[in-house]
Image (tube, rainbow, N blue to C red):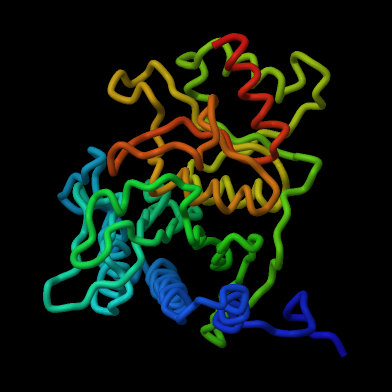
Length: 342
């Protein structure tokens, strides 16, 4: 009799899936496989802490302000430290960079360096922590450019199309890890009883018929004419588009994840509200690029309104970009409105 617990008759753990994908790369040594499994372990640990946050006194803020000028949440700090400590000593990583840290994170001299670069946003949507809304971890892995020794800034400043792996972990009603290594996008759900991520969403494809648009419409008065008119298009107020439903959580991972599975577009355009952020709010390396890789492998597209996100060459660790991500035809329509109306 078919299992009622899982949508597949064959139960596949994330470890088994990663090992199976390794077969597509004859040159593979198993290092990347181990690194991915360590990231899955990060997800299990953070999931455990988030579900017990109220009891463990890790809700609320610290007294610190991060490099983004944002107050650091206690769970932000915990997640950032956990990812670092699980990877600093393995010999797999040349250098790391975190959305929470101003500079690159070097591997301590007492540990060997490896051939991979790990970039991460330890806890996306952290403003939602205290109200129990979904949050997530976003990550990407690149091969180092430098030949040996300590990793460098240039190892981190690579365009998204160089990415080896991109993905995220979402902590919500269930914990899911979604990733791609360039062979499709796959989703795994954490079974808390087994303590394992199990394959529940193989080869995800964004539905051709979109359902939702996700944007913080409270900032609409600060948008350009092109973005305002594109939003009208999504609402069916101009053009021949059937109106889409509006859904916005305010956690990039959660909004993107919903649209990945249901179809739609998330966008965070530049606005005139904050003159310090003329190019948008979202971070290229830690948020936009990894999710764009996931999206494109699922049949979607991501743009800054003028060019493909994965083709942007980063100039700094904390570079910000506008982001339009989801169904290809909707993102291309956004580009069209921006070209036409600004």
